[in-house]
Each structure stands twice: as structure tokens, then as C-alpha cells.
Length: 253
Ligand code: 5BU
Image (cartoon, rainbow, N blue to C red; front, side):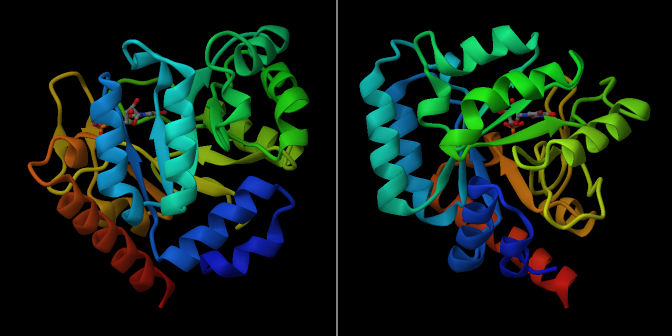
């Protein structure tokens, strides 16, 4: 189904907005902005902002973090029209993740439209995050699968994650997965480990091409080093955007 036809299938505000944005902007590209220098991070976002539907952050890798950085990212989000996904990978009991999501230095729930969690602690992790995120219209992705070689997110673990998404579908908007994991089109699958040419990175990351990810039923391709290490970040983002969008058009034909 086309992204715009999926808007009405979900009640979650972040999922609706993302489908809307993807259709409007004709982009299913997310950039993984894994830069520690805040100035380089902002420069990257300025370069790629027009090409992406979603900015993926790891806010805890930023050296000399200040709350003003968040203000800058939110200003850029409004200017270039994208959403923000903090790839926090929560992994603790419900009560602790609730605090990690809303308190501390980062106060992730205040600015990240989307975040994600491991399923390993059980459904309490979803319930804890949901208590602070749902009223703010936030969305959660479950890590049903992961990209690196040798990871344990497979089989029953993946299946149970999909069941929990169905059970908590007001807050869980989809999955990190290497392929489509549910037949229900309200769920969004996002795929990391994407690089033109494929390959790996020496630390067991495994890359698929944008075409392979989208043809396997993913909705959003997540690209880090393929874009931020390019000599021309803007052009690289355009290339990935075109590759991802053309694969989607071909899939939906
Ligand atoms: P890369 O530079 O394109 O390899 O970056 C991939 C990004 O996606 C990086 O931020 C990872 O933390 C993130 N990632 C991943 O690579 N694999 C996974 O299974 C998950 C996240 Br979940």
C-alpha cells in the first residue's frame, strides 16, 4: 500500500505524520547522524534536511551536549520538514525506562517524535515508555530484528515482538527489521544497515542496498556512513533518496 493510503490506518499521531511527510516529500530516507561534534552534526542536518523524512539521532554520542543543540535541531526540523527518531534502544524495566525517556540531561520524550526499545525485558518496557510518550503523541519502534552479523533478534523473539506491537498498537508504530515483519500496513518497518554497493564495516555491520531493503517490504531506509562520510553529503542524500523512492514506486506498481 502507498504511504498516503496508510495514514488513516493508525491512530498514532507520529505514525500518521510520518506517512504524510513521506508521501508529501517523496522520501523514505532517514539519515543516521552519528557525529559527535555538535557543529558537524548541525552542518550535516542542514545539508540533508530537504532530502529526508526522518532524522535519526544518537544524542548520547554528542560531545559537549547542551540543550541549545536540541533547540537547533527542532528549528531545523520545522524548516526542512522532517521528524526526529532518537535511536535510544531502551532495554530496562518499565519504571526505569520511563525515567530514562523523560528525565536526565536529554529528556528525550520532549523532542523525539519516535524512539525504540529492545523487547528483551518484556512488555513492561512498552508500558513504561507509553505512560510518558502516548499523551505527547510519540511513537515507539520495537527492535524485532537487528542488522549486525550474529545478533540474537530472530525466530520467536521477532515473532513475539510483532505480537506485542499488535497489543500496544496505539503507541508501537512498527519495527526495526531487515524486511516487512507484519502484514498489517499500519506498522512501519525501518531498516538500518543500508549502503549503496552493500558490504560490511569490519565490526560486523551488514549492509543491504536501498533496493533490497525496500523490495523486502521495508518502509524507511536508514543510512549513516554512506551519507555523512561522503565528500558531498547533500548529493549522497539525494542519491539514496532517489534509490529508496524509485524502489518504492517499483514495489507499489
Ligand atoms: P551506518 O553508518 O549506516 O552503518 O549506521 C547505521 C545506524 O543504524 C547506526 O546509527 C546504528 O546505531 C543504527 N543501527 C544499526 O546499524 N543496526 C541496527 O540493528 C539498529 C540500529 Br537497531
